[in-house]
Length: 397
Image (cartoon, rainbow, N blue to C red):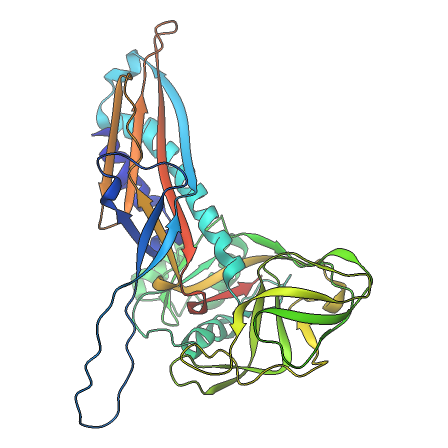
């Protein structure tokens, strides 16, 4: 009962993670998984549109992405024998709910760190957005990237952004009762085609030091590495993992039509970048620069000496810190869970899993004879992955 209560509470407490694709792998239901185990995450099927009256059947092949279960988060506490007599309702409120709240916050914080994989971005770093236009620009980018027009879009913002946007947009959220809830309790709802939620765990990103006048080095840059020049002399952290930049003349394309969106393609730095002594260096980027085929990302290769512009409020000075709020479709990110191993030789060890929510929780309880107490821990083992980062957009604050 305690374990099932914990699972239910975790499902209710999640914020950002509640809006992403969650999958449970039952292959470890008997033996139990450990940190480092790998599970296969099923990716949504994509089809190719054909022309004409002739039937052209396509094989429906499930695609999978390997996801490493690299995070084991747990909350540890103890109670005495007298407290063992509490009713399940009292026990839930006194012990389970606070523990699961802390655990859910840690899962959300870890998930929100996936912003480093997201290259779409709007807003001005260091300035909290309040106008609806900024958020509409975020969803615009998602639709330009082929985002499905369903009800699976979420916007997750930090408390500062919530304060401004609830005040500015209080008459635009849902029904009269929902507007009343915002006025009385500061709640959020549905607007601009997305479900809005506030999360205290929105990550903060600090832009790299930059310096110099960065340019593309050479006219044959393609793939996931960009050769550059024009930086100041050798220095660390010219760019930080998660920095976003554009290249002059390199435009994004819609992944379905392969036509230009009219906006410069944004790239995200996937590893910290340090310049060489002569101001050159290769930057690891996403998405890859691809100019043709099914996975085309840009209209053309960057020209030699094309200007590189980093998204930063103070230009090439760098160093701006910004909360990274997110607009995202459910399929942009995946959380994968599996059952943890059940140890022997303890007072109690139980697991509860829910394929519908994609979550699995383990509780282990022992007995300390010296102090007449019951040490207890609640664990979750999971992995996170940005499966389709183009279906997410950063909203800088």
